[in-house]
Length: 162
Ligand SMILES: [Cu+2]
Image (cartoon, rainbow, N blue to C red; front, side, top):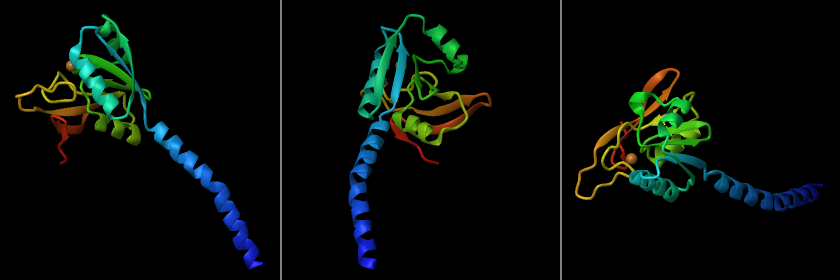
């Protein structure tokens, strides 16, 4: 009886193994989130930011338009947070040079919010690297119906942990 049970478990485990492998693969696939970036065709630093996202495993899609202000208004980006490009990922809005690590945290924590923004174009943020210039420190802001609050703080590409 016991031996038979053991045998059954062994068969069950062997049968499950490929399913586990498949699950692992699906997980890896799901971790390449699709992000749609809307930018002006003449924006260079926007391309730099998109390359950063690709290098960090995002599937990047681009929409080029000269009417970026209209897109920001439609998506509800606060005027004072407006930057050079506006992106959408999993129902969130990403405004400006937000580092990929902050976007990944947003996607895993799923806060009740409209999205993340980095105001202006800080030197040293992803896509804004200027050789010979010291990286600036800046906030990644979470915005939504509640207003704004600090989500993360960076110096260039490096996150400053409090
Ligand atoms: Cu920019």
